[in-house]
Length: 166
Image (tube, rainbow, N blue to C red; front, side, top):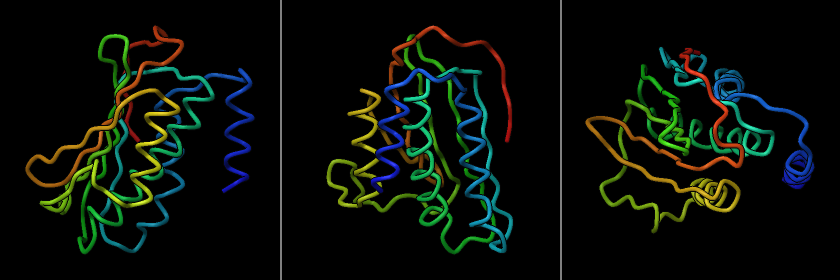
């Protein structure tokens, strides 16, 4: 954990590059795909605008996506032989939104972000608020669950239209 924190701190202090949300999402998905092998037909999709982010935001997004995608697999798709986990992203004015949704079991009726005691979602909420200066929202619609983070990047304005799939 300390190594991750040290690397994150080092990368956030240096302007060593820019990547896209698509590249971050694809890399996290690539690392998590082996976890679903042998579990049936579980697929991941990444889609949205071509949005550039600097190293600090990319590092934070990688941690956030890892946690949210892992939760979707472990909880949302628990006991299911098929399902889809989707990472979507785009712009809303000067803000960026990133959403992780599954078509799985949904959230417990009593679920509340404010009352959630789970370490994973606590870390997610803290990173969104402290590192990205944004907010984390959730909703349920039909089947499954969706967690969406919304933040304003320091270098707002770097984007070009496009769409891709993982």
